[in-house]
Image 1: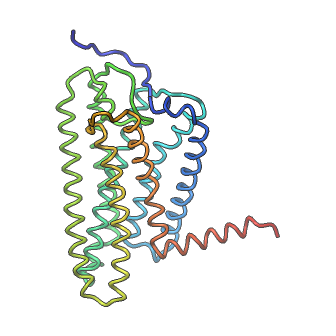
Image 2 (image 1 turned 90 degrees about the vertical axis):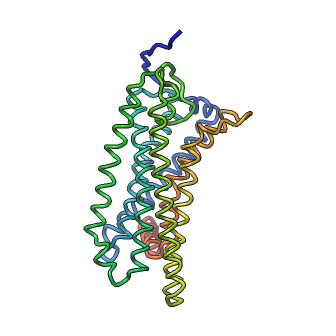
Image 3 (image 1 turned 135 degrees about the vertical axis):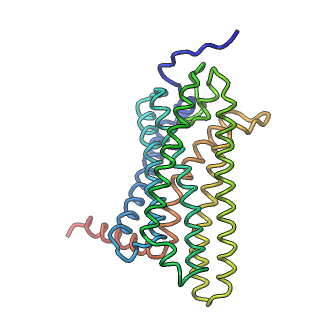
Length: 315
């Protein structure tokens, strides 16, 4: 018999059921992580916004990464905490689609931003005299605006297309929604959208990797030819970007390809751990890496924390 589309009032998130036994512990951990990262992100954005000397392309791109991280975190952590406290294990189809849209837009925008950061550092090191005209603040804002606009339209089309497939099931083996989870529940043949989605993802990832690898190889070669002090400073910046980029890509690919890991004997819990850990790592590490490894930001963050601690002490 042919499957018939069912009217699904709510979708069950099996990951929340798996977390039920230790839900208060998970809630505390999630709350601490989210509040800590949110405070750090807000501090970094405020420092870049209020410090005129940081109004340059590299810090604008870092600020975009941090803002995008807050956007992705807001689509994941608050709902998870509410569900853990209330005991809810379901999400409406509309809510599921919105969450999938937000998380996928966040992931794609991070990949784009890391790629343009690599290109920006390539221009700064390889063409220092022309850099002020090649990458202006105006051009930086245009790059960022175009990326947000394009990805919003792209993901809207993809999510709406996914929603039109119809559902013959109501259980998702995760604690959050993504279009791949919904396609597995589809009544209709989702091969076309699956192939197109995989092709676009592979194209974006491969293109990004090629640009990043090329830019950083060329930049490292130039760094070896300049003065030792300038070389150390440039390499420190490059290593920071590479560390953030490689960590994000590893976490994202783990999440993106977990459904394709059809390894015998691998339990659904393994896939759940990959999904949750991958998203948590990708939304957490950027502010930590840039906040700790970027000297200017680190000094100002420490200064702000010191001032806050002094204000908190009684006279």
